[in-house]
Structures are given as C-alpha cells and as structure tokens.
Image (cartoon, rainbow, N blue to C red):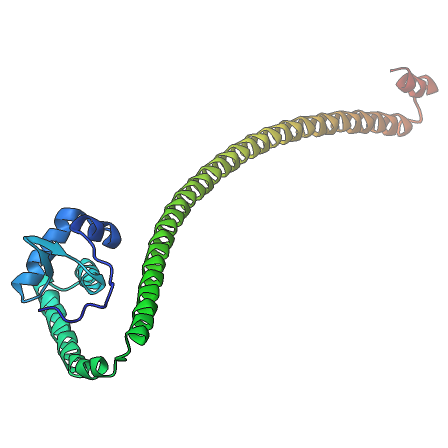
Length: 235
C-alpha cells in the first residue's frame, strides 16, 4: 500500500497527468501499464489510476529515457520501494505524536484550527502554483511563437539581402563589361590614329628625302644652267 503520499497532496487524473507531462492520454495509460507490469503501485479509484507528484516524476522519466522502457520502469520501481521503506520507518514514530497531543479540548480545538488553516493555505498555494504553471506554459508557447516569427523574419530578410547582392553584383559585372568594351574601342581608335600619323609622317619623310636627293643632284651639276636648280622649287 502506498505510504509515500503527503497530506493534501494534489491528485491527477490520466488526462491531467498527460497535460502536466506533455504527452497524450493514451501514452499515460501505456506508461502506467508498463510500470505496473514491473511492480509499481498506483492509487486506484476502481480501475482508474490516480496520479500524485511522484507518479508524475515517473512518467517524465519514462518520457525522457534513452533506455528500454521496461528497464527504466524497473529502476523507478526500486526507487518507489525505497520511498515506501522510508515511509514505514517514519510511521513508527507517529504514535508518539498522537500521545503528545493535548488532552484539553480547547487546546485540541486550537491545534485542529491551526491544522485547518494550514490545510487551507496549502490548498490555496496549490491553486496558485497551478495558475502559475498555466501562465508559464502560456508564456513559453508565446515565446516559441515569437521565436518562430523572428526566425522567419530573419530568413526572409537574409533572402532579400542575398537577392539584392546578387542583383548588384550582376549590375556591376554588366557595367564593368560595358566599360571594358568602351575602353577597347577607344584603344582601337587610338591605334588607328597613331598608325595614320605614322603613315603621314612616313610620307613626309619620303617626300623630304626625295626633295633632298634632287637638290643634291642639282647642286652637283655646276655646268648646267641655274634654271634647273630653280625648277626644283617649282615642283
């Protein structure tokens, strides 16, 4: 029999245990069958299992284990047996507590009143903890949604940036090719102009050489008339 349950400890149905652990209700039933098959004890309401906090911990252990479920269940059964043995040792001292209770009805009434107040405070704390857990789950869900939105925005922004970079790179390459073609055309035009100048210069040199040669021939013929010399300048 279970002796490790604390006074006023919260009880969970299979559905509530599934929500608490974050698994499906059929999975809770499956884990419960595996635990019982290996010797684990549950509180029962007829055929229905009633889960307490230590049972929630066992379900979480099965959810997160990397070992075979039966091996983990056996470990959990050993842990439960150790808790039950500790509870049995504690129960030995319980009669002493009852013997020390006040015999005066008024004092006993005050003790019971104190216990009732403590019980009410504990229940209120459990309700507050439940609300806090619900709010925490809501906050976590919102944070996950925000993270998804931010991740999507970053991905979209990165995609747009890459597209812009690719477009700018393409434009830069096109502009570079245009400039290169223009420079090539200018270079070709300049080469033609230089060649034309060289041809003109070559013609000038040839004409000058021809004139000098005829002048020299005319000078070397002194017996001829000077009219031949002047005829050179008329040509």
